[in-house]
Image 1: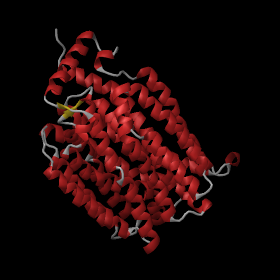
Image 2: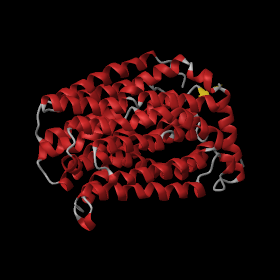
Image 3: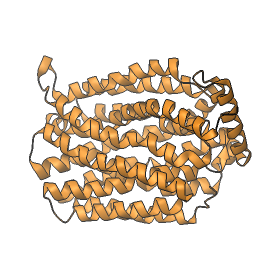
Image 4: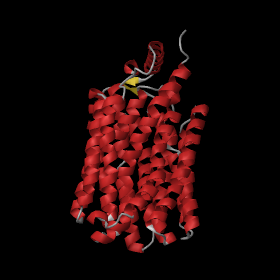
Length: 418
């Protein structure tokens, strides 16, 4: 008897998403742990908010420069080998952050971390297109990308605890933070080589009939897509419009992510460990909202309004967060902002991957992500510079809220072919 495709997809989801989820938690934690390290590092090394914001954001310049070639290589050599390479190299660079002694060293290692990690996220998105048809992708991508917010929820308390190791073994707490949080990426990179199946046809954990059923479903789905070359994909106007929409998400995500511990430290006057616990709340709220909105988008078969409405909610939360400096108000409003923001991910990537397949899809995904992630440089830099100028985060939060609302409105001009 031919297996039901829904049961096969559910089996694939249960097998793949938890593992990819774990990989992305480690990736995101290594990307944003500098926000927690800053609670000690900035004072120890004499970094101003502008220096810190520039160094935190310069990660994305390295990431952007190598994003497209990295994802094209992944499409050619396979996700298993290339994702393993990415993880091992970024783990080594992340741990090396413990040796930073001045602003120049900080900038160089953050830039190299971006180069090392380039291609990871779009590579995973491309990998998922080889396993799940377009109609299933919002919920699947949302489930995978909850790792973004779970990394914040889990990483806050862990990072706060690691900072408490200050002076243990002759190292500062922020040095222990970088050293120990880089190791899991190296270990998991080796695991990827052993356990990640490239395509359904290679999955030993599916039966022969299940492999055939899933492969047939994906062939049918692919027949409705355009299989373009890298060159034609990069000249596609729809791709560039999607990149413009997505640009505003990293502006806010990393603007908040890199400065959230410092905002909550100022609001609460608490210990680093308590700040780590408080910082988990917005991310936990985001994890719940992300799954709910992704599922609703798939059921409704609609993407654009599932991107725009959460963006407006997020912008509203950012604006409200400037109305008071109290810790409860800050946690609640920043939780609203984070919940709205991350809810955009599933519907957005379902929309972005709905019309293109093959190597052109890998290049298109990488282009969207690389162009957009320049926002990851702009957000932290804007917040840091405005904070230095005004001694307040309020102006920076209003600025990135406006960017998000205006940028997300462009999604209404994107053709929805799902």
